[in-house]
Image (cartoon, rainbow, N blue to C red; front, side, top):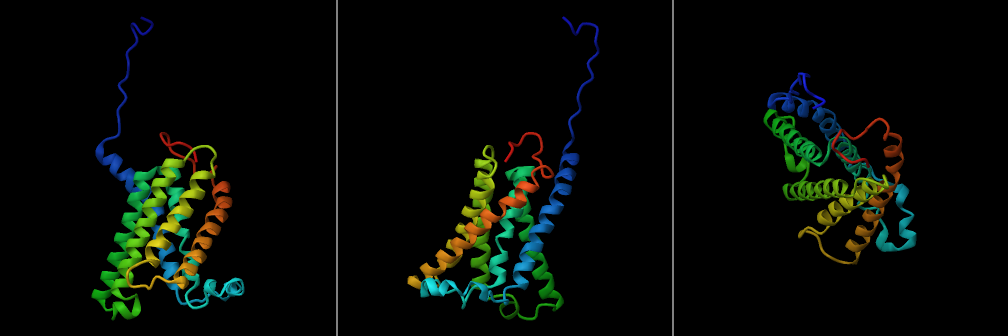
Amino acid sequence: MLDRGIDRVPVSRPGMVSRFVTALVRLILPVVALCSAFLAAFCLRDEPAPEFGFLASIDPLLDPSDWLNWGILLLPLVFFILNLTSRRYGAALALTAALLAWLFIGGAVVWGLREGLIADFERQIAPYALAASFVGAMALGQLVNILFFDWLRGIPWWKAPFLAAFLGGTAFAVAFNTRPALVWDAQLGGRLLVEAAIQFSWALAQLLPTYLLRRTVRPLPGFGGA
C-alpha cells in the first residue's frame, strides 16, 4: 500500500558473458601467484637446506640432509595463496585457479618440449613417475586445503587458514612420500615427521601475513569471514 503510485525500476542482473569475464579477471592474480610459487620451488629444488641438519642430533632418523632443499621449504606457499583466494572468492574459484595453474604449467612444459627448450623431460624436469606422483599428491593437498578452508571459515578467524594449510600440506606430504616406489621403513617415518613439522610451522607462520592482509583481502558478499 505504501508503494502505490511508485514505479519500481527492475534490477538487472549481470549476464552470463559479464559473469564469465569477471571470473576470468578475478582468476588472473591467483593463477599467476600459484604458477610463480611452483616455479620458485622448482628452481630451488637443488638448493640444500643445511640449516636443518641439527635435527640429526635429536634422532638420526630425522636427518634431512640427503633430501631437504629450499624447494620443499617454499612449496607450502601454494596453500597460503589458496587460503587468500578462498577467503576472497570462495572455494569454487580457488579450485578453478588451482586447475588453471596446472593447465598453464602443463602447457608451458609441452610448449618447451615442442620448441626444443626442454630436450629431455626426465633429465631436466623429473622422471615421469616422480612427476606424476608429485602432481597427484599436490592436487590432493590443494583439494584438502580448499575444502577445509571453506568448511572452517568463520570465527575464530585463524582456524580456517591454519588448519587448511596444515592439513593440505600434510595430505600432500603423506601422499607423495608413501607412493609405491618408496620403501616403507623407519627412515620414511622420520621424513614424514620432518615434513609434517614443516607444514605445521608454515601453517603457523602464515597466520601473521594473513592477519595483516585481512583488511585488504576481504571476502566478497556471500562468503563468510575467515
